[in-house]
Amino acid sequence: MNVGNAGFSAGRADYVSLAISNTGQPFVAYQDYASPAAVTVMKFNGTNWSNEGDPGFSGVEASDISLAISPTGQPFVAYSDGKHENKATVKKFDGTNWVDVGIVGFSAGSTRFLSLKFNPIDENPYVAFQDYANTHKATVMKFDGTTWINVGNAGFSLSDANYTNLAFDDSGCPFVAYGDVGNGGKVSVKKFDGTNWVTVGSEGFSANSVICLSFAFSPDGLPYVAYDEYLNGTGATVKNFDGSNWVTVGNAGFTNGYVTYISLAFNISGQPNVAFKESQYSGKISVKKFDGTAWVNVGNAGFSSNIAQFINLVFNSSGVPYVAYSDGGNLQKTTVMKFDFPDGIFDLHELTFSIFPNPATNCMTIETTAIPAKSQLSILNVNGKKCITRQITEPNTIIDVSTLTSGVYFMRLTGEKTVVTRKFVKL
Image (cartoon, rainbow, N blue to C red; front, side):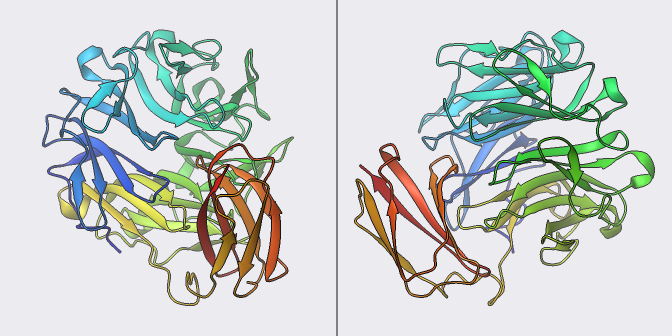
């Protein structure tokens, strides 16, 4: 179902990037052809989409846009800045205006495939990109509060790095996945060990060169990569790293024909989901999830009204999947949709629970109206990192929270068909 109106942007939208705040508010950033191809960010207030600050606030053409929400709830956006030779620029919204994070055009040269993420430990913004100042190799930079600095060596990949995707494990270690031209355009992943960028598993582990790529960590801390290959429209493949090797999740090439604009995210049960433009459905969007045995459709395949591009898949804190995209059925304007779970598949009302005391210092009691099948209780910090996980087997459960640092947390109870979330404060 549509979130607000379909095609809500003022004009054509490219490089669409979706993020959802910890309070559940969706934001989208995009290259706005109603504002000379500059960056615009919009947010959804529950009824309508409205501009966050001035539309086209970059002032000139901006591409390869990546949007992220900071741990404090501020939207940040990274882009290749046409005013500064397509070097990287990052801005944040201060509540009134979009302001520079460090200097504009801070990269050494032009950039492509920007990926902006926040480190869950030091809470600094990091950007990975294809670095034209280093023969199109991969570079990662972070903002240390004053300036943008390289993380390890600039240009650390063997050769050109396409589709650079940045992600962090729970310890705050940065990982980058990319199409590795030095290994035939196949997928490689590297992580920063504190000194150097080292290969995770083997380099070039996909069967063939890739045409799209998406990278993320599962809630249990495993890196996953989703991609499609050039060879004969092989179809989407997802692999995860088991500590030694990259292992195929389900079947390789599980889609019908080739896909593009693939986007990987995890649902509240930890299952990998992928959204993509699917050739079998005339370039419309499909979403599939791995149910532990096979890749199955989430809702109908090919559910968008027409061809979709620049697809982003994100789950909100209640486990509802959202997709944002450039909508060929609405003059390539921005559309956001979410999946409306039918009764009996994802029922938020079949279970309630209460927590007390709140705020808490040492222990909390969780009181449930029922014990859902395959139930699990998780406590997450505001960055979404799991801090405590417990099984629920009794109507009343006592949880020791004394080891948590002071702050706001979310307590999430999940079952086979249920998810409920509560917020609490640790003193």
